[in-house]
Structure formats: structure tokens, C-alpha cells
Length: 274
Image (cartoon, rainbow, N blue to C red):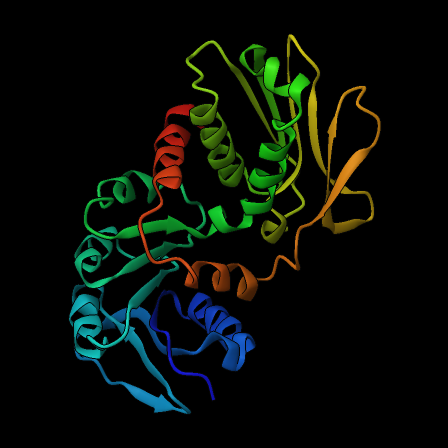
């Protein structure tokens, strides 16, 4: 049996807490986490129930969530708060109790302005950031090509097709920071309406004075990504993974420190607007 690596505290509505609990169960022993599940409600007293190493509190008032977290977290393990929705005031009070705070709400926009104020109080991220890791990596690798690197300053139009517009804004915010764009860049986000938020983006197109760059999911196989430069001959194929909630959260468990790239991308995403 693997040693525990963290206490994961899931907070949100009952259905979203249940969904996260199933994802943590899917991680199995490879995850090595102590799970605390708290669903919000109107109760003023915590009544924890422990089953097979998982502690659960249902229907707790947001005013008392931080007390429950302070009570149940262990000083010997990092505390990762998986925030799946709830009172924004409760989120503020939780920041000093979390070694890492992972946002996972829909829509994300309502919580982002509050989240940006917490950067100096905890290592904060959004689960969408993990879903964008391979998209960001694939695009960055295209800039290793001399013809792309030489024309980087002329790239000024970004088109994104996405099932999750918030993830598209986060990706656009990251790119805006990387290419030091001002207001002159044109960013167009088109919702696909697929409803599959686990797949976030479906196509990214970056154009300007040089060769255009395209990222897109592989035809009938959404688990892989094609990265292509106009007129370069052929596309690079990279895996996207299974996109499951469990795999995305598992990626976040491996991170401990603040992520400056995410923080800058989040601020830029809010400036881009819906």
C-alpha cells in the first residue's frame, strides 16, 4: 500500500462532491490520498462519517466549512482543497488552510476575480489549466521551428473553437502573456456546444504575417492532437490522454509550488472578457 501524499478536501454541492469522490476512487492506491468530502447546506454542526478511510460531512453551512477543514486537515500532510463550488466568502477563508487550492467550477468566471486576490495566500490553480497542458506544450514546440520563431512577432490573430469557453479564455490569456500582446491582437472564441468539458478545446488557429499554426483534435479520435505549421509538410501527433476527471486531478496532485504562468494567464483571461 502506498504512503499517503496529501489530504484532499473536496467542497461543493452534493452531486459535484459525489462526482469528485468517484474520481478519487478511480485513482485507487496510485493516488495515495486521504479524502475529506464536504457538501454545503444549512447545518451548523459538522457530523463526520468515516468509511474506508474517507471522511464525509454532508449539508454543512458555508459559515462553518473552514472550521471543519481546520479540524480535519493533518499538519503532517499537505492539504489540497478541491473547490467544486460554493460560497465565495468561504473560499476566502479557506485560502490560509490550503497548501494548494484547485478551482473546478462552472462557470469559472464568477470565481476568477476572487481567486486572483488569493495568489499570495496559497498555491492556486484551476483544473482547466491541467486540461490545457498538452495543448500549451504542443504549441510551444512549434516555436522551436526557425520559420515560426522568426515570425512570432507578426502573429496577431487567434481563433479557438472550444466546448469550454472559459478554458479557451485561459489558453488565450497564456498565449497573450507569452507573445506579449497588447490590445492590437484579435482573439475569437467560438463555443462548439458539444458539452464535453473534459475535452475543453477542439481547434486553435494562430495567424499573422508568417506561416499559420494549427492545433486540432484528431478527426474521430479526440484522445490525440495534431500540431501543424502551414506549408511545412505533415502534422505532429501527440496524445491528449483520456481527459477524465481523475486523470486531470491526478496531474494537479503532483504540483506543490505556485504556478506563475497560470497566475499571469488567469489575469490576462479576465482582461480578454467573455
